[in-house]
Length: 545
Ligand code: GLC
Ligand code: MG
Image 1 (spheres, rainbow, N blue to C red):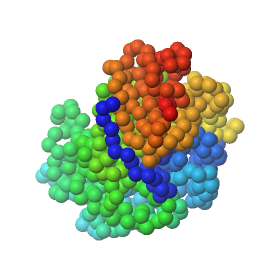
Image 2 (tube, rainbow, N blue to C red; image 1 turned 90 degrees about the horizontal axis):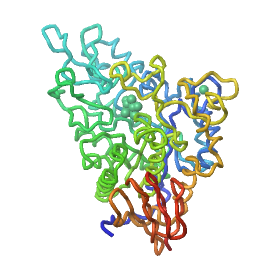
Image 3 (cartoon, rainbow, N blue to C red; image 1 turned 90 degrees about the vertical axis):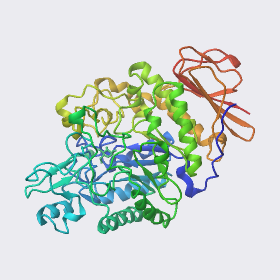
């Protein structure tokens, strides 16, 4: 035995998020109730029993608010309403009522860094002109150059190109993302008050938590100083989605004041309302500053998602994340896939090898202490769709950078032989992004009840995670065991019961002697009795009492 982390505190119901498994629903692509080719809230409602049976604790819904949908709904025009393409507020209420009745909690996405350019505040700002109070809610500025013809500074958009767009009267406005996503001025009291009220609006409707979009972005350094280099002159990207650069528009200390104001609002509601930060920070230490008893509850560990397929890489990020979680007293928040990143099957090599590794990595993640976020379709082993026709791609980053996140946003295959595989009712429109011809074998129906399918693997792992005392929130932390090169082995204990997770990232089968009885494995084990062997690119959980 080598290192061990402290035992996390015992959970209460208010602490549900400490060990929850949260399933990310990309609303547009999950389930289509009305056959228009677009997922919607009634579609989610109809599929809630599937999610309950899968064994998740909560859903995180990507934005379903009124939006021109230029950035998939991360361009919000009305924070208090549902876009007609997704349904109505009454549909939301019905969905959350049913979810709660099934024991599923609901986390919604909050997008505070920017609004849509179709938001009434921004149209008012354009109409009101330079120097107006309406413009003060956003970041308008004069340009550089003799006639103000150059952007106010050298900041670049995450989606490529300058982060500034000039309006007809000559002023420029800041947009760290698409020009249709103007950044708000978070030093303006009306902006702060508005979002506190938006939080209350959804808390009053019963949501259990918020995923905070670009949680590190709201405060920009005073004076809007230059970064000092641009992609155009150096060829090196100034900023990337989920990047780690130290930049004057990200991770400014003052942003924490916002969360210190939000936390008492969350705490004033019963039932453990929580918030998880999508924050990109330079170091795990700076990331940890977003979480704690007076700020947010969780922050995604994107280092885990970024780890390469090697024992050293995983070991390093796990140790660092666990160490930070003990310092701040908040659980670690693991994630392998989301709507912005290539699916982990494909990141680990695609094809059969990528799928084996993805299944193993998921078992690894689900054995760790803390909360785990799943992205819809990973329980089916979906790969990234790499061959979408360019003309169907919708990601605003695609035109500017050639990179597109559409390949992980293809609608879920539910059943049947032909696309869209039961995504909508019989006779529906084709889905907004087409599913590959090969996906019938990956559908929920095709995998249900099939031993060894990815869906049954997730179901088994989630059931054990719920029931096993050594995986409970009050069980022991991670104790690393001696293991050969390329092998990760750790145990967690509850009383005399020891659960060991072994992941084989080496090139040869690994003996599982002495770890006890196998509970679940990502590939069939070979050998018999105490002579089990863990195949290459596989993981297993074993139990000793
Ligand atoms: C977050 C979202 C991403 C979106 C961006 C701008 O990174 O996850 O999908 O494009 O914010 O809101
Ligand atoms: Mg629909």
